[in-house]
Amino acid sequence: MSAITVNLNRIIQLTDNQFYELCRENPEVKFERNANGEILIMSPTGGATGNCNSEINADFVIWNRQTQLGICFDSSTCFKLANGANRSPDVAWIQKDRWNALTPEEKEKFPPIAPDFVLELMSPSDSLLETQTKMQEYIDNGVKLGWLINPKMRQVEIYRLGKAKELLESPTELSGEDVLPGFSLSLQLVWK
Image (cartoon, rainbow, N blue to C red):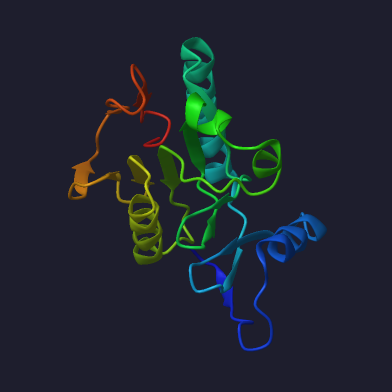
């Protein structure tokens, strides 16, 4: 992530509500917050990455509308993880019953829940190590399945809860396995 990390902890430790308000008051800036309370200012993606993200999200939305198994989220959604981090994956999905267990207030702000599935699509400015660390953080906080797609290297890292990371070289398709039943993502658009 070519993110700028700002550590204000010695001056102020933002509460969840203060961090939420910071984000609301600066909608043109994408913020995340790591487990140490440091604020990350994320750079926007370029056109190619943004288009690819949009196409991938569309596939998830279409599948989810057909199956009605859960709720889809785009990269502008920030989740409050159990370790205290606030993270915004490029694509996220939560089983409907888990989402419905949240209160309306929890759904309105940064939902205090780890998605069942996350996807991170690397842009040219992203750091592989930082993105891998973020993916592991998702899994450590209860995400069941995660895909890190690296178009430049034509690689996909698959993260599964309780299992070792799997690296795929130039796969043509990814399976949603038992987390996203019946879903498959064609990588033809990604590898173009």
